[in-house]
Image 1 (spheres, rainbow, N blue to C red):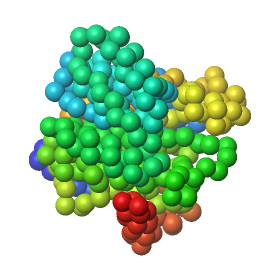
Image 2: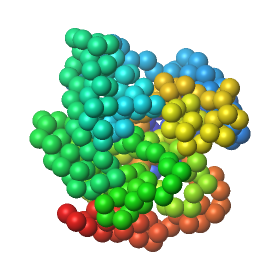
Image 3: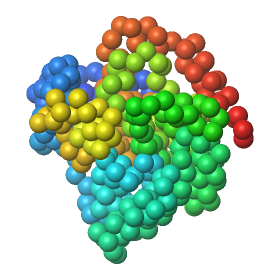
Image 4: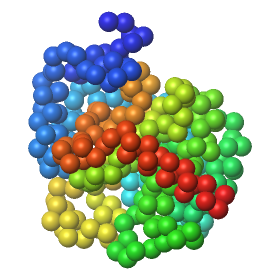
Length: 323
């Protein structure tokens, strides 16, 4: 096996085909424990799973300025997982662009990051509501003027108790978490390609119960091998969004929820690790390991090539509306 085609994972003694993601080899003890945690869901998604996995001797660490040459865009960076993500990325020396819909709140986050590390890399703000296509295009145009972009992290998300729509009449959660990221990724693809960048989409363990085909891990242009795409779920994390949108779940699972730093860990790792550790583009990750995209037969059956293509075309149509 050559390193050109395969990436060797020392923590599991498994070789992973870079093109297909198929694994061969004998799992290590840590790999077996990880598999058991993942199979049982609740322990694996809780803080218990993170704390056990992060004790592995192969858990990668990064130096203080290891990302000093990286430029990273993060949406939804003012609280919860997004705030934890930008704090950790800045501590590693990355230059940041914070995308938020509320200028005052996003500027406060910027100032707090600068206060924490006054002599660190740059932190800039771009204002856009990810549910509004025209604002996403304007923000993308502003970002596209940068000289490089190493990672685009789609973290913005919310769950409203009421049905809200954007200016085009599209339900706001779908607009902000599907159409908005679709537009921004497409608009910034050339810049990402020149920088051999990455697109990281923050999802949820709840996606396992959803029959909608997951297009967050697919490239808008399959001819762009220079850009690496990944989606991740943070496990069950204690964030303001979870407490406000899912109060019953938060109360019931409270003692077992991860903190925001633990939930953001895989996002930071996907942005920071050597690309050789990521194997094939299009993976779904949790706690720094690639996971299955399906757990239920119903979602597997619904995830067809025709369904993905239909969703892709729907996104193209919605992103073009009002352009």
